[in-house]
Image 1 (tube, each protein chain N blue to C red):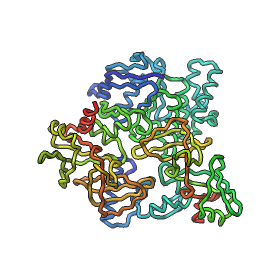
Image 2: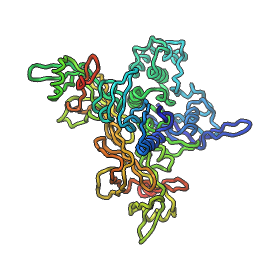
Image 3: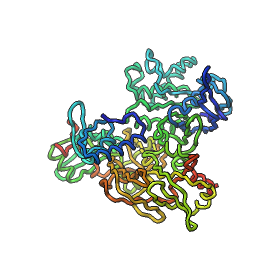
Image 4: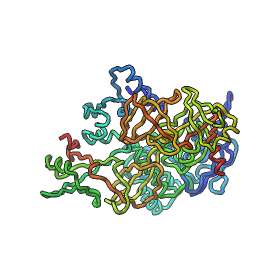
Length: 377
Length: 209
């Protein structure tokens, strides 16, 4: 397959009354063989971006390359990209077999090539038994696989998937998600996958491009986005349960730098190595972020203790959640399913100092990521 | 009715916590309808599982999860879904072995309690259930059987590994920070004490027969 490069891409929709800026200045390089997710809430511009890559939408400004070819103005066929749609878009008057073969028939491919290719994709997606059926006789999951097969049979340079799991129930979603990951690892192809579901993106992608308000917020691996978020939006959008956020103020006393919660005046230490830079930033109003799985019940050296009363304890099968109040805000911790607490119980939670995130409360930029990345470079 | 099926995960979590607290503070008898087992386990003092108009099981969240009355309840509580396979009971007077029908390399020696249950009910075949967190990746020396990596999906606090074992796919719960290669062969072990036994015909948990 091929790489995909977006250089300073803009998309503006113009009507008589107003101008809508759907995509603003996106730069993104999807490597050959990479699984890239475009993630963001509805209206963020992710689908528009995908449609520009496919060639279903004109590019207002900027350039798109597939491999080394600039594809602006080319038709979808000329770009040799394949797309699987959210609604599957199967031809209801054709059998599954003819649906899958459609792109090859349209290119007048020899019969023996078609039957070989058909066998290949049917093997890969495990749909041999469905070939003679009509799409209307298939379940949602089966329709999805047929739609994937039809996209794959063309040997595309790039494979684009638009919310392929959104209409499937939980069980089917789990198995289809595994199948899509398997397919990617087997084909070693370039996949671009659009979703609003952060768990889908986290569980599938090599890297994720997070978008909001038509702007690319951050591109990174699962670990980078979880541990080094660029801003509050990214930190809050990714994670389940979501990151705990508490309003704080930076305080200096006796040469010590700490943060203090705005409500309840709880003091929380910051790593010694951050102090100088935190002072240099000169930001007083901060938002403290702690991921629920970075909190634990076991005390360890260099861990900060936060204590409180259990507000809510939830046994959820594979894990349990403890929710308590810290600085007037709820703080949730993910603990082992073997733990048992009751509301009202006293609880001590511990977190590694360097796992806290500090955001500028005004600009929402993540200051701790900035410090960590400055130290790394 | 579940008041929040259409909001996103973050809001749902927050509302779940709010409602939990509110219900306790008001101390009001509350009946809550939901299709989401997470809400059921989280909110209910007890949970009633309904299938096709009949009440399958009523119990505390931990009972529902750890001692499901049948395959239906077992499958509807927990993520990823519980693995369930069919096994033949091979026994003489002394020993007993549960041999998976579709996986030749997988058999279990049941615990004493499980043997008694199977003997008492005179079963020649049973359905075996095991939760994804009971499937352990182990060193070669402790290997019970071999699984081939089909796909790995890392989430936030855990990962879901799908293993191919002689063509049968098994869900395995792992830590999130793992890496597995496609088709990599892993040594796997499942402790017999972690098995759920269901009747092959009625799909009822043998403990309840």
